[in-house]
Structures are given as C-alpha cells and as structure tokens.
Amino acid sequence: MTKNNAIDLDSLNVDELLAITENAQQLIAKKQHQNLYDAYVQFEKIAEESNSTISEILAAGEKLEKKRSIKYRNTDNNEETWTGRGRKPTWLVEALAAGRNIEDFAI
Figure 1 (cartoon, helix red, strand yellow):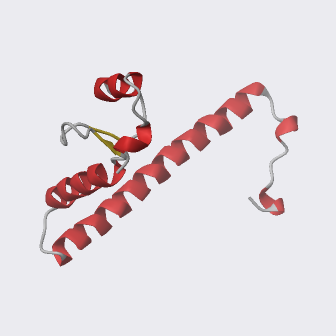
Figure 2 (tube, rainbow, N blue to C red):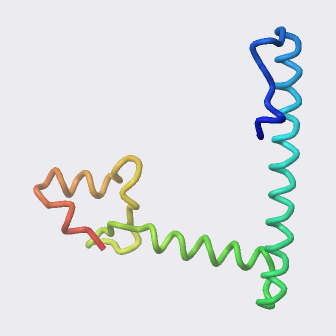
C-alpha cells in the first residue's frame, strides 16, 4: 500500500473496520483461488510436455518424497522405516530400550 492509498484506521468506526476486514478476506480468498488456478494450469502444461498425466506425476512425487524422507530403517525388517518425525515406532522404541543406538538405524 502506498502512502497515497493509506487509510487512517483510527478514524473509522467498528462497522467500517468490519467492512474493510470482510472485503480484505474476500479479496484474499479470491487471490488464493487465482494462484491455485494458475498453478494448476502450469501443472497441466508440465504434464502435457512430459507426456504424463497429473495423477502420474503426483503418484511419482509421493513415492520419491517417501523415499527421501526416510531417515531410519529397521535392520531386522527393511520394510519398517521412520522419518524421524512424530512418535517413534514400536520397533525402534524396543531396540533403543534394549540398548541399541538410534544411529544404528540411520540411513
């Protein structure tokens, strides 16, 4: 907002301030929707250029993100993993209680 467009909020009454707030929230929602639409259009273009569908790209991204975010793996069962976020899985809690170090499971 430039100084020329500045509003003296102190001079407004409650109803005027509420109206400004409501208008601002509507404008924010409209701009967020437009940003999402623009991103979707770009995503469609990328999918078309890569001869893929949006669903295929999203599925591939989920698989890559899951692999990238894994920080710990159960040495007794390679399918059991943990990202290091949230509660520790039972297999890790039990191993730590048995005296193992968390670094033993780091990938």
